[in-house]
Structure formats: C-alpha cells, structure tokens
Image (tube, rainbow, N blue to C red; front, side, top):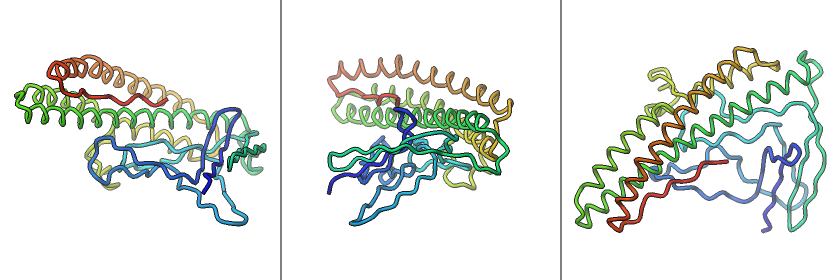
Length: 267
C-alpha cells in the first residue's frame, strides 16, 4: 500500500517519473469524459517479489490538452549519451544509483552531435507543452465566463455579463485557433484542415528525430521562427487575460458573483 516512485535524473533535474500513485483527473472546463490523462505514463503496479521497470531512455511526454489529435510523434525525446541517475523511493527509503547511457557503436554521429539533437528536441517538447497549456487556460476561462454569465442572468442581473463573456470568448477562440486547430477530431482530419502552431512544432520534432544525427541549421532556424510566433501569440493572450478578463472580473465583483479564476502557467 506504500507508494513506489522511480525517477530518472540528470543532475538534480528529474527527467522521467514512474509511480504507483494514480493521478487525479483535472477538470479544465471540458466535456465530461474528456479529462483522461493520455500523455502520462501508466502507474506502476508493483507485485510481491522481483519487479522489472524498463526505461526507454526518453524524458516525459509533453502534456497536451485532453483528446488532442496529433499527427506525428508525441513522445518525449531520447536522452543523449552521458551519465544519469535512477532514484527509487519506497516506504520512507530513497536509493540512488548512477546510470550510463552509451551511444550505439554503429551510429556515426558523435556524442556531441546527439547532445545537440536532444537539446533541440527537448526545447521543441517544452514549446509544444507551453502551446497546449495556453489552450487549456483559454478553455478553462471560457467555460468559467459562460457559467458566470448564465448565473448572473438567472439571478436577475440581466445579460450584460453574459454578452461580455461571449465577446471575450470570441477573442480567446481566435487566439486558440492560432495555437491548435479545433477542427481536428481524428488523424484523418489533418488532411482536410490546415495545421496550427502545435503541429509546426511536431513537424520539427519528426524531422529532427528521424535519424541519430546533429540537427540541421535549417531545423534550428525554423524552430526559432515558430518559437517567435508562439511568444507573440502568448503576449496577445496575456493582453486579453490582463485587460478584458480583469475588467470582466471587476464587473462580476460589483455584482457580487464569484469571479473567473485563471489557472497559473506551468513551470
């Protein structure tokens, strides 16, 4: 009944965590049944006696919004050759041992080449997660505003808040569509609808991980270009959250209705 946790680390940084504890589903204002943790690792199920856990040498997958449709890789990148550590926590005890990841002898790329590859893929993974984190915050805010507007109307306070919530939601939806394409409901939809920013990051990951080699200069250049677009969109989102949503909440407080609480950014 004691929780078991196995962590793989680079220095003090945890790269991957396996645990017997089951994660609680998070409600971010999505339809019922849409909160399944599709991206996380399955919980460890320890049994009496010897147990084996195989690490695929990948870091954690990027956390995507529930039911996200991805055409391409959604795995975390494999670590580069080097010395890492495995840490086991159980029943108040912590045991740590070094782990060495070696380059395959038939791979012509140098260890430094593979470190550069991992750096790019790790950065892409972080930007992809950042993209979907913004979408989750947008959807959460929209769901809360809709609920507040409808509640205000039921309390006899008119439709002012409901109309304002709709106007802000339209702004947020326009931003969301730059980050992900909500029309994607299945893998085949990628053929019919243009990909948004998240699939541009995924495209970089697919290309850069297609061989054990140093990323091309064009891969880095394209990554920097897409990252710049993401930064611009996130600034646009912050402006709506800090101004439009703040004004909405001020009106909500004046009407003595609980305001919209925006989840904090990850990291």
